[in-house]
Image (cartoon, rainbow, N blue to C red; front, side, top):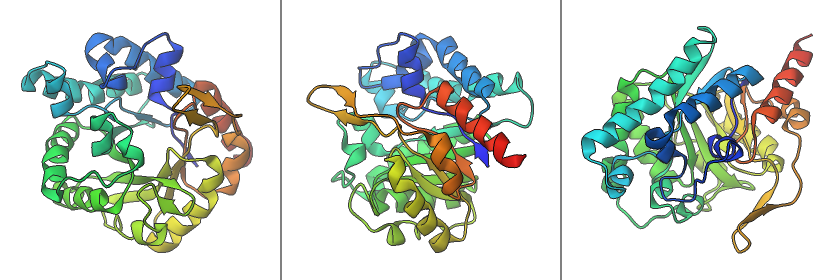
Length: 285
């Protein structure tokens, strides 16, 4: 099993940062890049083999709407990879950097990444994603993390770009039960990223209890290794603006999933990744 990292945003919030603006964790690429680097180091120290860059919410239009020039926006997107690479170099060549590519809905900052069906054309989605993909690839990560994709229409656009750019990536949907967040059956959704450039297919930002069945479907449909990094099991209460419920131990569940790439998303921090790494080591004995 390859152990991934956990959530960037919750790790930054644990370090005292307010991420309530539209740029979310990407704001710190400009305001406190050393804090992003510190989070990467914390996850590597916890046993993660992969650092996922702070570019999930980073986009050219997002930065420009925040008042930055295009050149400044390009520099910050590039910086997201450089920060992770610099942290990785402190830990050895066996660690990897995955450049995060979040969905169009993350840029909208209105929760639509959990609904999909944005009401924009495929051409508009391509125009949004293509420049960021090119910038991230030019910064030389080991692979891309196409993540939290809510529907197959956006997936089709991203898969076409991956084919053209010919760069390795894992491809991960945000799901609920046996469907994407937009309601498409996972049997249909997982067929979309079945291209050579995609090294693993799976799910993230979902309930841990949805993982096992989704992983089995992903591997059955694609024949590829699976990637799985769910949330903690807690549920976000939008009205109260707080998390409710109890955490579920990923370390206890992960061995039953059959996924090759395993980590955590929302509310999963270095402590949980340390437990996951320890569980993986115990399984190897």
